[in-house]
Amino acid sequence: MPWADRSLPPERDDDPPPDLPTPLDALEAERRDLISQVRRGVHSKRQRQILKRVAALTLSILAGKGR
Image (cartoon, rainbow, N blue to C red; front, side):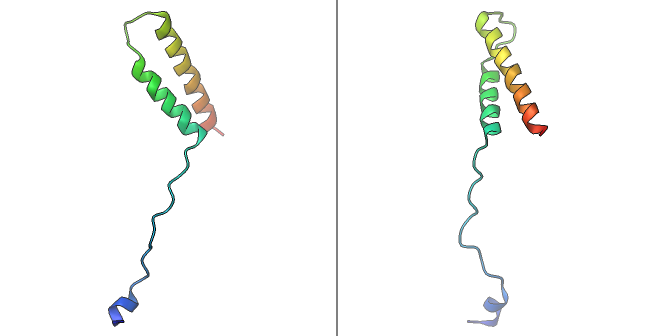
């Protein structure tokens, strides 16, 4: 083994494991999905339901990050 190879630090053979999704990530994903369904200027029962759910998710996310 040449001197240059011995002087280098050992290389990592594997990548670190990916981070597991958290419940907060699931809420954020659902919120993003619902926001993509919102059509501004359309006033329907379904749109009101979506906006209420987005508001509830936003509050949950903010409450979760504050802890």
